[in-house]
Length: 304
Picture 1 (cartoon, rainbow, N blue to C red):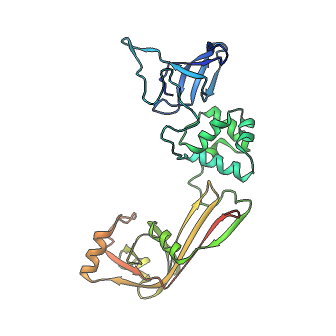
Picture 2 (cartoon, rainbow, N blue to C red):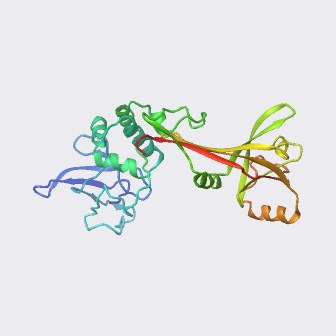
Picture 3 (tube, rainbow, N blue to C red):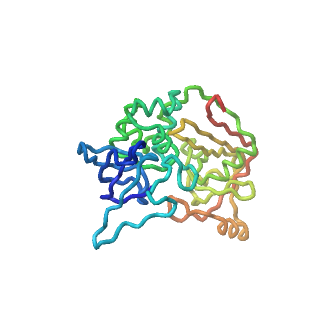
C-alpha cells in the first residue's frame, strides 16, 4: 500500500463491503508512501497513527493539473498489500525498533503485552521492531510509557555519553572468544587503543589501524606518544559496545612493536591502507605490532 498526502484512507466493512470509516492522510512516515500514516478521520476530526490492515485501501485524490497519483506495482486494484509483511520479505530494524525490542525482551514482555499497553496493533509493533520505521511523536510517547522509558532514550538521545551507561542484561554471561574469533573482530575494526610507557608515565592512545598479514599496523609521527611503542612489548585493544542490546565484546593483543622502515614494505602498507589517520597532520611513521598473545571476551545473554 502506498499513498500521497491528501489521499483518502478508507476502512471497509467486512460484511457489506461499504465504507465503514474514512479519513484524510495528513502525514507520511516513509518517503515511498508506505504505511503507517497519520490520518484525520472525517467522523471525529481526530488524528491518529494508522497501520492499515487488509480491510483498508487508499483512494488517490486527483493531483493539481487533473493528474491522478499513479498506482504502484505490487498492489491490486484496490491498493491492498499486507502491511505486516515487508515488500522485499527482509527485515532490517532501525535504531528505535532495536531499542524497543531490546527493552521489551529485557523486561520479559511479549509484543502483545506492549502493544496493548501502548494502544496499538501487535502487527504495527512488529513492523517497528523489524523495519527501519520513523514513528510519530505520539507513537513514541505511547511506546515510552508502555516500556517505562523516556522518549529521549527511545530516540537515542545521549549517544555522546560514555558507552556502557545503559542498563545491563538481566542475566548476562561473559564468554571467552577463541583466537580465530578474536582475529575476525580485530580485522573488522578501524580504531583501537595502544598502551605504551612514556617519559610522563603510562598512556593509552586511540589510533586508526589496519591488519596486514596478521600484524596490527598504524601510522603516527616520530616523537609522538604512540611512537614510544617501538622497541617494547605493548598491549593493543579494540572493543564494541551495543547500548541498545546491552552487549559488547573486547579483544586484547599483546606483542612487540617495531617501526616499519623498508621502502617496499612502507609502500605496500600505504597501498593497502583504507583510511587516513583521523587526527590529521604528518603521520608517515608506520608501527607494526605482531601479537604473541590474543584474547577476547564478549557479553551475551545467558540463553545464548
